[in-house]
View: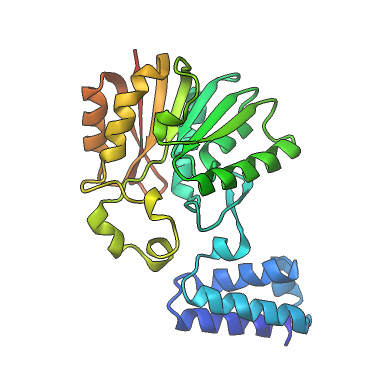
Amino acid sequence: MNYSETYENGVRILRGAGISEAALDARLLLEFITGEGLTTLLAHPEKTVSDSDAEKYEDLIKKRSTHIPLAHLTGSCEFMGIDLVVNENVLIPRQDSECLVEEAMRYTQDGADILDLCTGSGCLLLSLMHYKNSCRGIGCDISAKAIETAKINLQRLESGGELNGGTARFLEGDLFDALTDPDQRFDVIISNPPYIRSSDIETLMSEVRDHEPRTALDGGDDGLIFYRRIAEGTPRRLVRYGRIFLEIGYDQAEDVKTILTDAGFSDIEVVKDYSSNDRVVTAKYI
């Protein structure tokens, strides 16, 4: 088959399986297999797809039709302009989380010490360091497999000189318990913690519910357990006038603000995402 026919067949299968972005996913998978870009589909739809590529494409389309996330099939995801390795051991970075990085960039100075809690793929820490100079970062996660993934991403960025003179480490452990220096403090603490209510997890789309790590999703009965733990531990780890940046669910702003207020934080702000939903809470500790 030619490029256009192969693509249309992929779209048809994905639409039949109820994939919401069937056309986009079919195109991205075809580009992934053939190494061709969008130009080929638009300008050279008659180009022949090799039997080998057609077979590989059909296999990926079948897998995507079972709602395996696209990023798991390609093994990568773009976040803040950086290509990151992702897999079933980490949450797939989403555009909403870019709002957290963009907000943190406003306050993070070159040379800052940054702590990323529940780091997963390392996307928050590494992208923030990518856009700043000479920062020192630590990412912590309770999952050893997540830490392995984050280290792969770190090595890729280091080898490409994309940390701008900065240095980073990824440590396995439960929030602050992962830190090896009991006296170490940070200028900035960032986190996208688990915040889905336990009872809501079964209502999530299949791509998330069945294929992303539940430990990175489940925030307890009210979805707030990790915010309480982070707020409790942060005063011992943040420098005076340092700031914390937390991603939140769309309906959690007031609860998280209350948690931070009770823990002694001030200058609390709520930032909306690109869909005008509350997405980030930031606060200062004096």
